[in-house]
Amino acid sequence: MPHQLTDPMEMADMPSVSSAEPKSAAAAAQRILRVGVVGCGVMGAGLAEICARAGREVRVVASGDQGMARGKRRLERSLENGARKGKTTDADRTAVLDRVSFVTDLTDLADRQLVLEAVPEDESTKLEIFTLLDKVVEDPEAILASNTSSIPIAKLGRATERPGRVVGMHFFNPVPVLPLVEIISSLLTDERTAAVTEAFVTDVLGKEVVRAGDRSGFVVNALLIPYVVSAIRMFESGFATAADIDRSMRLGCSQPMGPLALADLIGLDTVTAISRALYEEFKEPAHAVPPMLSRMVDAGLLGRKTGRGFYSYG
Image (cartoon, rainbow, N blue to C red; front, side):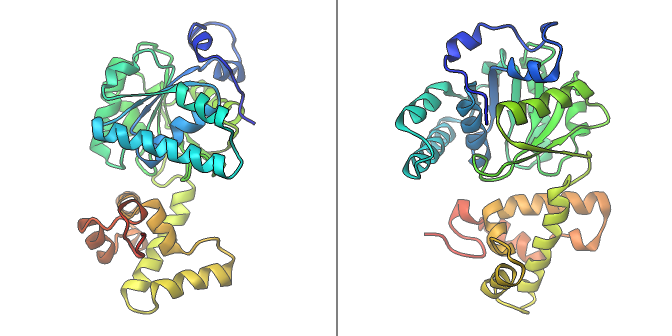
């Protein structure tokens, strides 16, 4: 279970993760008390929630006032859903909200000990953010982590002057529910960085960890996205309807969700970005983005988050 700390103000006065003691990764992870999150979409709001639930003081950077309002609402809605299902109390909800603040300037992350980047899957945007974080975050031992689904961590690390402190922390949607986190070390990532990150994910956040190599798609998406893309091609060819494709995989393979409904949940823009990254690295025809998928993204039909993808959502 996540380690709970009751007073964020007291936590903020404790030494930084760069202190000589304690030396163990587990103890160092417990001393990460100030977390920054860049981006407050579905993933960013989820990351803020689980870190705040674990007693950490969280500062979320939004792209502007509208993004900040949407991010706050996502967090509130998730906590309300948890309370309705009996998973949280009103006191828990209040405590989490009190631990999360929203800003619009990356410079407000200067005192963070861990920063989680969770912006859309665009390489140039992520590279720019890591370059700025390197200049802004004051603690040289702070961990700069990306929630990227496919972009090589080495590229993000080289955008900074501290590539040894850059690591991948790939969570899955919905973040508060799904237990897995992929930890990705590049050839430049210090082993201690990876060890402290893993300890934070397991001991503080209460998640399960898989270590993955720094290649496009890591473990899960390298297996999942070709399957999803194959289903899209089947639908595009007219071989079967979307409903029949999904029903076949649910009833015939005991999958909780069919591949096209899953694509809508992930976001068709994200599926496209991962598919493109896989194709660029491995040049496998099965990884190429189907024309239908490209047209849907161009039309703004991104799945659940826009209300329409392979299915419509009221």
